[in-house]
Length: 518
Image 1 (cartoon, rainbow, N blue to C red):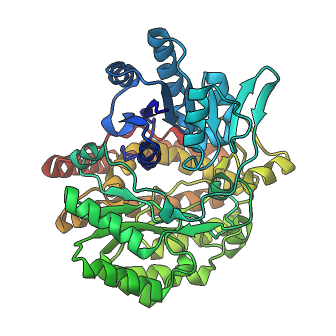
Image 2 (cartoon, rainbow, N blue to C red):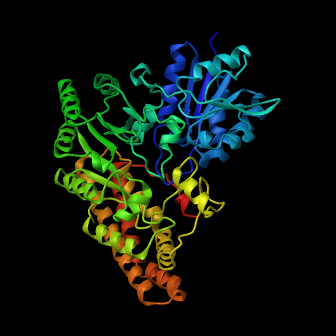
């Protein structure tokens, strides 16, 4: 029996610009293979609110509604549910994604009928069929729901091993991505082999299982999707949204085969990735460059070996330095992930990071102030809990205090500094880190602006360290307030320049002030 299903993503409150929600496309393809009728409404990509989403649903009221959510857009999901109930009565509703996986009770309390924890492609058809037939849900793995006995959580099943078996995601919403000059999302693997203490990817994708931490599609399967996107829609700019693009067995031989396959089909690609520093070699970098690699994020995180040990990072300081130098030689745009503060940060570690940032002033960062998130499902949060350091607060992450007196002063000063211009920083870097589809001269122009604000940040970092070393704490906020005023003309100039660039290239930035800087 076929059902009609609406797949929705609420508008997300984010400092990032809107991008595709690939999960909707995958679920739509899986459901359509079983002859279910599917409508996709990506509220974030379309930049529409709850009422507008429900207006679209009203054109063809579905039997079942599914939402892909974060914890940060739970309020938007609630609003959609309230409007749906008012207009249509009690339609069964399912939600999934990172937010529901780690906060399943919150989403049940919001009004959802069923919460899916982790990957959903192998269970969504079972869930839809069970709802349609009125069957018992308790035999479906990886879901949470309420019955007369209370909250029921079924055990997670093993994640999908053969990713080639999943049909290519439906591209119903691709026109909205193209209108925004967005690259198109492609996922070539799932999971990560690293053990970073701050990351919840492992728990989300595997549910705690130690088997198959990382799974890959075959090269031919990947390239077949790239060919489809190019031949059907003219897509050349791709954002590979893998959590980690270069896990074993992806090595120099794999990269060579991938590049040769891309070349065989004459695909003029430009693509962005997310990588680990300890997976790079000259052969890998040069091979990916030949295939169209031009931009990447890389999780450097910190320049002090003591901090990398606390983070359980697999890469060493030497790995990080070597990787960045290789990427610079090959002219790859690099967004460097940095986590400057955790609960145990010391002033000596901050000095080490200052020197590192001053040397690598060409990379793109999200700002001089960054802190380790204490997110649900991470080893770091469990460690903080054992120490008794967790505090309630924040949209998606718990809070804690930096313990060292001097380091805490630097933390507080740099946070005030960063908040004063974080929206501008996010706007400037977005076109390269998202990235947007631009000619090379556009990337060059924006990268120069990134370097200007990075240089200003690094100088402020030095000023803050010197102030904390030689002056009493009572002057801290006054120093930052004065520094913000001193730089007002500089930042006004950057505002003007980035606006002109966006106007020239027809770009859209609709991010909001960073909700995690509260």
